Length: 78
Image (cartoon, rainbow, N blue to C red):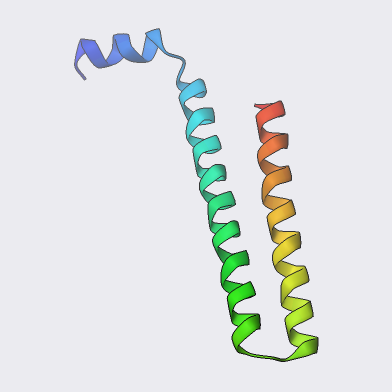
């Protein structure tokens, strides 16, 4: 390994980089959750099934709440 790479790892904490990558991945999951919510909302406008639409909407809202709360908990813990 080059000495520059080793000095870079010693200069920056490797765990800090892992935490940053983890938070970036969680923010990507939040974006995915928001896109999923918009897709379900669009699908509910096209396909009109009252019972299934309600269940899917509730599941996507719970998914979005879970994603945001997971990010906030990770932000506090990490």
